[in-house]
Length: 123
Image (cartoon, rainbow, N blue to C red):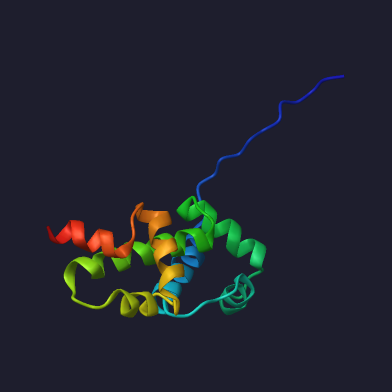
């Protein structure tokens, strides 16, 4: 009996997957103060939650919400550098109404608190 080798296809993401992931990312960043579920984002795009998650991971090489959190924190870091906004105001713009939760999320991405980040950048 002849065995066939198992194929491991590594195909490029399709244009539809690229559009789905990029439009979802753009929507989330345009509304960064809001929290969305996978179900909501998938319904908005007219696809299943599984299809959205798979497409997103193929394009960005990260789970959707982990990638969005990282990008929000990078945006927040930029705001800390270029504005005099209070940390809580930047936190609220990112959808956090609790400064300590925002600080924990920020620290998980940038390895320091928002206050430490601003202090080091302004020195």
